[in-house]
Image: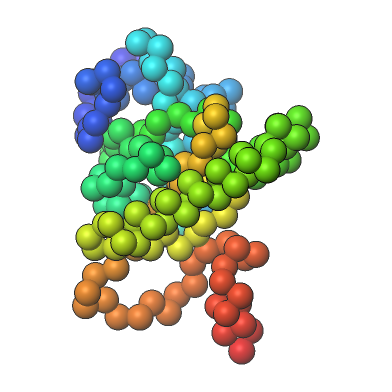
Length: 210
């Protein structure tokens, strides 16, 4: 069956070109064997292009029941990541919005999430205090950049061990901007909850109990 001609919108790509057909072929139509992670909004696949460049592809669920929520998350990641660049924030290379497939294309971060690293005894042991301190600094640098150097400021709203990726040198890369918001000057106060229980500010947990 011939692969349909669908354009992938590109922000920046190291090899200068990123094609829809390359993503489809690299993942064999999003075969589960290439799955490297799952989340509330979609599934992440590892894609190795003909150029041997390795990418991470987040394919969003095509579920009518939560279509509006997923669309908001999809647009949020694009709106936020297309305008920023920081060594401790995962890079967005491109995206595809189509009735058949909606996905985002990111840099591939080798070790995966901090949560998975800490669950692996061998990797957890390798994370000595120097690496852990450097990881914390990396996340703090990313947040400082988003809050103070971006205009408008970006509020992530879901920093957790699932959303911090580690590269081969255990350097932190903040990811998953599906619930992120741009803090506009005329924004009203947000009243909806966003985040992961156990990682939210204690004061927020207290207010929700009240």
